[in-house]
Amino acid sequence: MQEKNPTNFGQENGEDASERLFRHEELERYADVLLWAVERSRGRPLKNSETVLIEYDGLARELVEVLYTRILERGLVPVQHQRATPAMELSYLRLANNKRLNMVAPGERERRGGVNGLIRILAPESLTHLEAVTPEIQVRRDSARDPLREVLYFRELGGQIGRTVAVYPTQALADAAGLTLQEYAIRVRKACMLGSDDPVRDWKRFARQQGTVLEWLNGLSIRRLHVQSARVDLRLRLGEHRLWLGLTGRNMPSYEVYTSPDCRFTEGVFQSDQVVYVGGTPVEGVRLAFQAGRVISVKARSGADRLRRFLALDDGAWRVGEFSLTSREHSRIPEYMANTLFDENVGGPEGNCHIALGSCHPDAFAGSPADFVHALRRELGFNESNQHWDLVNTEQKRVTATLADGGSRVIYEDGAFTA
Image (cartoon, rainbow, N blue to C red; front, side, top):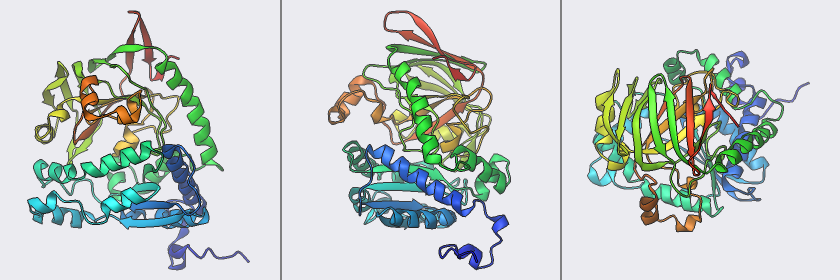
């Protein structure tokens, strides 16, 4: 007689196993991958009795319960925090006054300042519930959380905390991507390698494979980049003291190779061919024109005004904080999934390139983290902003690098790196 799983409450309550999005062993594998990602982000293993915070949306409960158990089985201490529902978040932003918008809720700083691991699981019930909330209110609320992001950044650099973020399938995501819920779950399963008998082993293998590309890029002494496709003609300056980064563990899955260019020298045009949700509004076909590092024109088939209103609230939001490439030979994500975590890693037939308007990635600084103060960030052209909008182009493209010796080299073509 097969022993009943004491944690499988869904089936005990009459839930049909055939309707479940993941088998129990797949959820365990997902949990193992997330714990590995936290340790990779931290740079060292979690030790016995250290704490791991799970921040999650309610629809991810099935995964969270398995992850909670897995944390305990590892000899660690789980801490769980369920985020506000869309209705709660909407009420807060509609009814909160200036004081409440600018405050950090009691306990939030302590959670981030005291735990050794942070796993965020996104399972949105809605992608558009904030559409009626003004950009000014949303940005004010997000800006109040800047000190929390700084706490995480410096604790992570010191090896005190590791963090990652992942997605659990929901109907809202599936509908936006034009998929059934089961089809969306299949995409997540493939992207995170959950069909493998040992996905952690496979992610380690991919990290070594990607590492050869990163070593190659970081050894080229690249000064400038020229990105060309049917609707992109963009020139960027990489800047001094830059690193190319890849699978850091902070996002799961992660196939992209990225850096933070010098935000003062972007020129040309970039057009996204994916829908991006900007403060709850779907924005489609964004076309940006840059001059002297700054966006001078924002056009889109829909939602351009919404994007402009957000950018107008922060000078850094008009500049590029990230440049990224994903190889079709690496990615297991074939198409659009209506979530930036997946869409910035999409492979498909031509890979993808994406830029982000707004905040840079501080870990792209090739120097001592202790030296990376705000004055140095400005001196080196690392963009600072309270916003970060990822815009993806999946067209066939060529990326040409100008090297320190004045020569040039194509580093990316037909959806793959040329290493």
